[in-house]
Length: 471
Image (tube, rainbow, N blue to C red; front, side, top):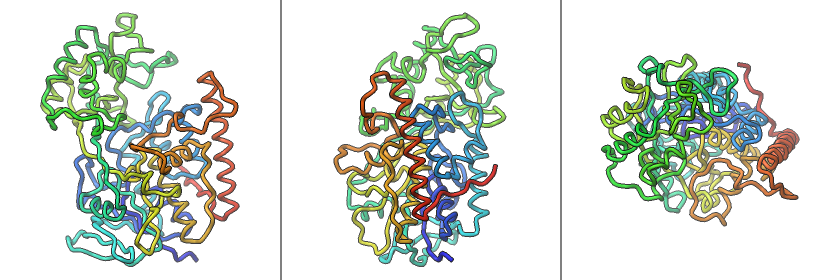
């Protein structure tokens, strides 16, 4: 019987995936989560794997980097990607989830596993032997028994005390950037005589998105008010403060009056049925739950004050009387400088503790929901291999996550910022393919073969691929 134990700090996407993967291999897991004892600026409860930004896990198209990553997750027995498909809501070519159902499903998997002990408490440090030190629900400090390995999965909203400890442990400068979440509006407050349902470039069916069409005059008025609106953080942001994937809509507009119209508000691929023409600009709204009772303003992350969000966003056609289920919020994200700190198995290269320490998820320098899930999965394989003295097969660079790990942990990577999987960091094809569509198809075909070989190697090494629970 396996008597090994791993302490995982954080019950988000990466932490829950890692816990379930280790438990599937007979490892005891102590899963520490500070919520609801200590909350964050954006979380609403203490549930596992709570999504606080978008509810979209991005494209499912097999010839996209995001689609490749989903295939890799499924091939390696990801518990959370299976839960995401189970809790999916319509989103065109993307995988979006009912976030409450998704969190509840993951929470049930964690609670039902006898090898996982969830501990509510704020981890503040590790002791000299690597034992977890935390403040429990009784508001007193506790010191746990030493585990065989420790995994930090506390995410971009790691508490200040723990972040300071991680800083002292890694010995490198902590990097921070500001991240923003988009507002959510109630469906029954929207004017459906103005909004129309359609997915870009798709005319087979009603479409999975609601679209708010702007005339040129409406767009220009909206942008002027957006630029003049009061912000929570009043100063203009420097480029280094903001992660590009979550730029507030007002910061995008600040870069150029038409910048939103060529980005998140682009009208391409849409036809307003009222006019039979492409609108000047358009905002898309995506269902937040399976019932379509609330909608997310896609790409409208914001730093505006709540009253200004009500005033300005109600200028959007069809949102004149919008009721906000959640206002957009902005918060600081924290991550380590992975290329300087992490080895290719996501462990700390240099560590004074007598137990191996792994850093996964967004704290470890990857960005994106599926990236966090895969980071937890891969980190769990690495931790299992380390504590059982088993050789871990190298993750192929031809895979989507393999290319990201190689980039994120290479000492040659400079000025690192958290990154999604993308074809820009893939191993080049030999021979090269000039046509983009054909090139992406070739990446996908090569990656699928590589992940299948990797799964086979895991089985041969006795590490195995976890069985996914039936929906």
